[in-house]
Image 1: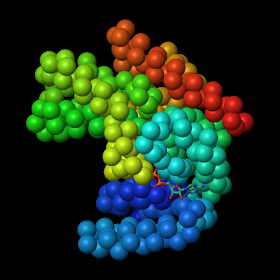
Image 2: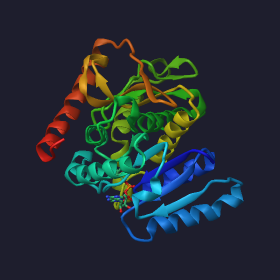
Image 3: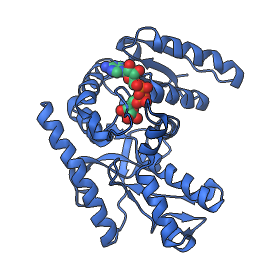
Length: 312
Ligand code: APR
């Protein structure tokens, strides 16, 4: 394998990302964590699974960033997850320190890497990593939109009994409870959701999507979701390495798109070998734009808190 992907944070999301990526057989993998022995153990376990599914991928675990040297992609999942009753914003103080340090350490060994951020609060952590690493915006994206859209697709499938393959949903905005599921664009095999489902059912799906992460936190009690966030990251990494020019909802740094600037925000982006190639701008109606502005205000508030905590 010629490509190399490093995953910082070998906890639930990090190790599950490695799992989904190994199945895709697109790059050798490095897991880094501060807990002694843990990334090594998980890497070895995953490596030993690969003969069964016939994948030739090198998987290495380490407590030292030198193992990440020469990575094409660095994925940051290090940090604490939510516990019941916590918002993603409650993680900010702790995770800012971890993500800032992880970015600096990773860049030391892979100065040209592309970054995918998963640690929450997502949009703020992506902003911090970009500023800390002085990265051009093409080289850094945050994962949230594929996950939020997949949650909505899953709920629509549960409600309608239609295959998830026929269901296209688009969730934009910040990765918080103010996210914006675009019901006017989401559809089942081309039929707009608004025509397919009665308003009360659609509204229930929108609400459940917005609170989808919290629903899992309150069930798990000790942590947050990992299968779906991790597979979403794997899809982004694959789109980049295979230069697919895939358009997915993801958190990108805005410079005037959608009338917004100086924040990471969930928008449709095109991913290819050079990273974030393009931001796609939908023509939104007034209600959609109002909802996006409300969501952007929440992300801006989080950045203000970040700026009061760390100098970047
Ligand atoms: N460098 C490397 N790893 C670190 C560091 C660091 N400086 N600090 C913490 N970690 C590791 C922890 O040791 C732990 O193994 O990050 C890992 C996080 O794993 P989990 O606790 O299992 O959390 P996880 O569910 O993976 O969530 C991590 O991703 O989705 C987001 O909201 C979630 O912010 C959270 C993050």
